[in-house]
Length: 288
Ligand code: ASP
Image 1 (cartoon, protein in one colour):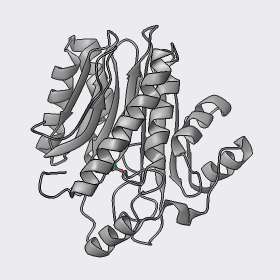
Image 2 (cartoon, protein in one colour):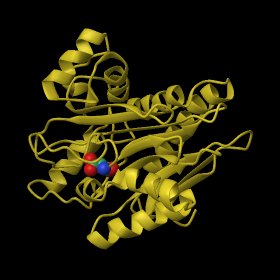
Image 3 (tube, protein in one colour):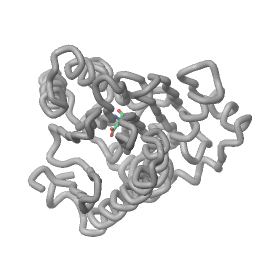
């Protein structure tokens, strides 16, 4: 996501998708809706948009398949739901929400998650629905050469609603050329996704193996809660720690008072912000 490595078409498509997600999620918040509903709805828009690596447009595994991961968390109750390695669910974030609401579990994986989706009436699609030519070309360019540093558009949302509740949600196809069965940080509560009304809500993107080892999302919340750091300071500190281990990526964060933060160690990160009645902000590159 550096200038010069992103085509005009990719740039335009990503900005349009981000603006649409802000409109949908922001509309829910402006109507007095819950943060949890807003993050789910925003992530669904991005999952349906082939410009992003989640839902339709997800990256391929080495086997030429798609294995989708997602998580959602409610900061007020610290209830959470997550799915990993699902292959037939159109909107994995909504399946994660169904796991949170309709099961006694936090995480379901693989065929058990897909079975649960069918039982819950969560929309199913043929796996070919997720495939796009652009992602297939990425796999062909990288074949046999998994690179945890190559990231393509995992999606996430954090929100604070009118009552002060926080929520976070994240959804991804993972990393191009991943081994079938590999699970990254995205669906792991505390790594790629976390929300706690006492601290903040966090959604992460990046080299999942490193984000898992640092427990990035929970670590940011812990610094805010226990050290009294601002969300920006906590996010920057944990990003620096992850970078020092060899992992790069970014996070979006929101505090209980609505203060937003983002922090990334990559040349760019797809991102957007909608705050009160201000105009939406959409950006990609580090210098924006
Ligand atoms: N964090 C995701 C994963 O490792 C990939 C990404 O954010 O691009 O699965």
